[in-house]
Image (tube, rainbow, N blue to C red; front, side):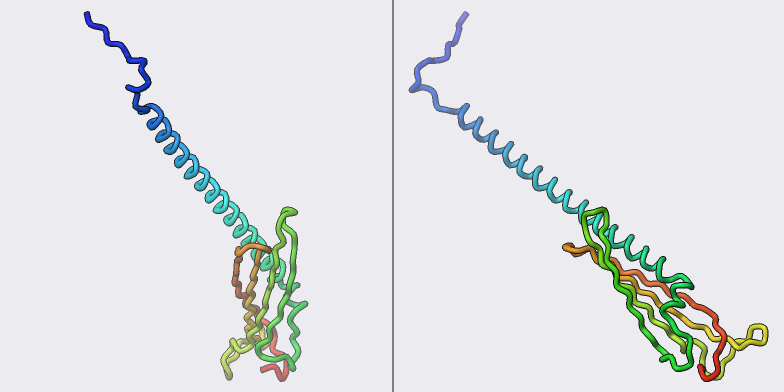
Length: 165
């Protein structure tokens, strides 16, 4: 039976274990760096999604607050001298979750030319006109590029006031 022995002579060793060990360490380092970059990117995606959702909720909340009939009456006058297309703007800002400030701008446009000239709408003997109010709520989260824009249109029948046609 023949037994082979590993030579203890340093001159006969070539350093293959060192080269393989360094190569494996390099591969593990590259994998670790790639995993860190991926997790940082995932965190940024999640944060941007959260900011977009904050802007979305702020715009929805602004529309719910300003598109009520009582709120419309505070912005819109019904006098005969009123201009046919009037625009009102409301600005607000709030801190959400104690972290970020959200700036909201609501624009209310009033169109009074919905009923064509010469047309009439009579309900119970009262001549009516359809007014359309267009709401645009724009919300932006401070220090980010997150933005949400929501549109809403409401129609309301109102009695015709003399000279308003």
